Amino acid sequence: MAKFDGHGYGMAILFVVIGAILGGILGQLLTGVEALSGVMPYLVNTFPVFDTSAFTINLYVIQLTLGLAFAPNLMSILGIVIALILFRRY
Image (cartoon, rainbow, N blue to C red; front, top):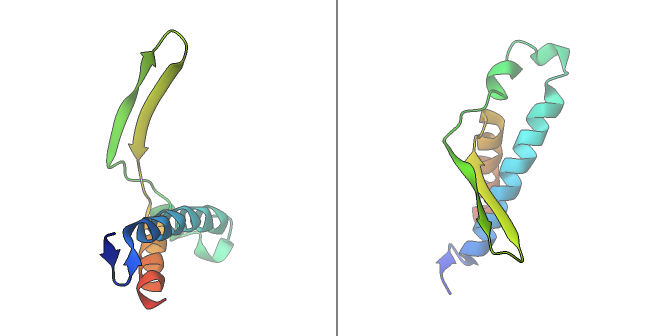
């Protein structure tokens, strides 16, 4: 199995995904804080990296609709960085 500093790649991907989600949620929660009102619009503004339009596969028994979009904000990127630091440390 492939390793990433003593841990598997699957665990590293899990840390990155959870860090991105928690960073995005934290950014949305902090938008209501009055002291950060000047900075938060920049931290929660999303930057679309890629966006594939949804397509449908009809198999006559099952119909699948698939699409993918990746639009991180600065808080989610900060969450990814913190998650990678924690992953490498522990």
